[in-house]
Length: 134
Image 1: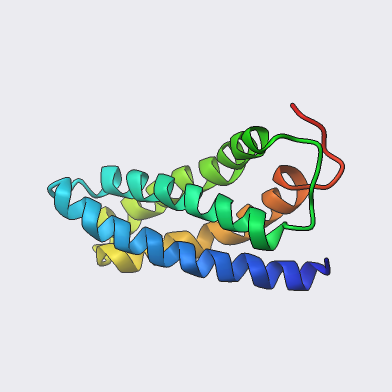
Image 2 (image 1 turned 135 degrees about the vertical axis):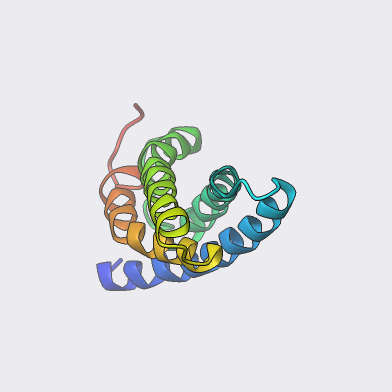
């Protein structure tokens, strides 16, 4: 698949994931009594699972490598998951606590900030064709 088409599909999945993450964050923040970093971490994990599922079916549907789905999910968490978790939590801390940006606006900025790195990692490691199991 052409990398531009793949990038477009990645962004469509990412946009849906952003909606999931923002909605989950709003809900989890209410449940967690304002502990926005805990709520952010829970929303990211839910979104990671959502995005992994849809990336398998759309973005990298043509990349059936020799890795098991469990191995790909592990790679997804070790790459996109860590980038998203650390990136989002750091950016959220700075924007919400330091600059007093509203919660959901800060989270949207964090999501966008991590997206290029996540595409590269998915394309070059998680779903790369010809990869064997760990």
